[in-house]
Image (cartoon, rainbow, N blue to C red; front, side):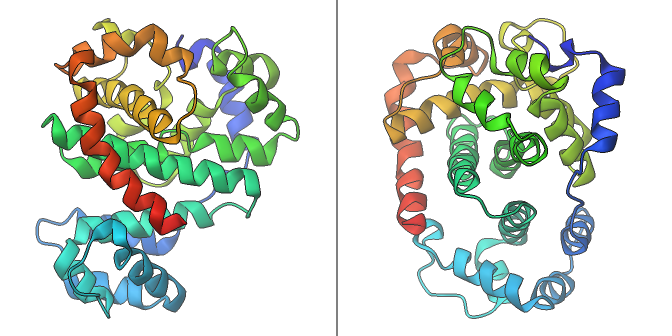
Length: 287
């Protein structure tokens, strides 16, 4: 079911009224600089280091077991030299997105899950040589970013979340019925506000559509179709890692997603082993 099954005008009017967190200036500046043919490390360093709290959080994350640095970075520029500017900008974006919403125990679990999902997307993309891992990571991180906005905006949204795994209806159909919009549409609006590439924004908006899984015509471009399929496999990997029941979407469409990615269920154990190593590192860092 397409996320656009709700009337588009009504959904867009709701977005006008909802508070979409603006992209922090430092993230905007970092993204703009990263798009240059030769990004200026000194400029990137000054942008991040100019915010003491952000610089400290970046170093703490960069020095975590997940990134496996052989020697600890003592400065942002050193972290960029070792990890690369793209990875450091990923870290900044991840921290900024999390900090754009008020602290909440339910959302803490959501952010942990989103991080695992982003990591799994990146590892699957790398393992299957589908695209640059940082593109898959960014998509995976923002994939469900509409959920915290919906959670913050609608008092009874947590009731829909509670129903999600038990309901016969698809999750976004429940959202559409109750709120006249859904987290895919809202998430795409946030992705646009945060200057993600247009094709990624469209892929986020359509990330519950089944058309890309079966090679059917859709608004999603070829890279977006791959991301949609990667996301389904990533959800399977994260659920397996967390030892929770697989979602209906995987049971219905998992084989189709694997086929579109040029692999099959016979390869799942190998892919899982590759993904699981980094998920364990991330889990140990989060404690």
